[in-house]
Length: 374
View (cartoon, one colour):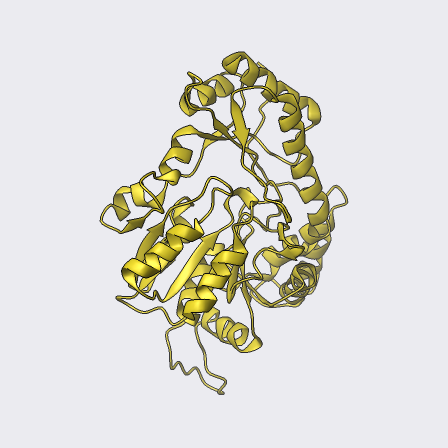
């Protein structure tokens, strides 16, 4: 059995940038939250993204929670949320007592179907917010989705946790909505070991988010609190890792895309398709994902078992939120009679996409897939 090929793991810079910033924090005793690393990480992300006001937080989930509060989502409200996603996209809706209404995906992006979104507005009226996800780094149909939200005066929240570095018409994902969400979890394209970032479209919201993330303390000489706050600020040590990772982010995007291209070249002619990349978009290809053709005779579980037998890690696509037991009673909206999200889950597989993979590693994975599907 060959060496383990992982799905996606942390990838520190060869130059040791991360350690430089961590050691600097130790030398200056900037261990606790706040400090130069936090400030500079936010600045470097703002420069890279090219828009918005970043606030570094303890997790992407914390950023989604704060976005709900900033958007004015309250108990009893409805929030339209993409169904084919990780649960962290939907859970913060419930933190504020609101109700997620799940929206189906389309085959062109695997993300929120604008037709299903319009149907949800027709059936259930104006929600408090819309949460769109860029699944596996692939941009959603932002022109139509943002247009629908603008037409109805509803804030758009972009869950770009998997899409750092992805672009839509040359503009970075996470900057099209009123709020954008980034994640730096250990398996993301860059990592801080854990952590996330909220992108606000105006400075006032960013300042409010910063206040909420630091227990909502008022600017007085004593501790005074006039609204409920949270302990969501990113630590200065973690931010040091992020500062170092920003230096290699363009390289990581390049590496991820090269892995996907190699898969596409080697698996041509087999009964499968890749997650589509629309014209005028650039996916960071965080995870290369495939869809097995109907009637190919192989299930995702069988393919994953074959990979695992060769010490290769793969994964099912996200199980849609409307199919999760915890959300069994929630509304689910499709554009037609077919649930695209369910079909994608039933036939989809995430292939190992670790940025440390060599092309020989990719070829080894492809060899197993060919044996199973040929």
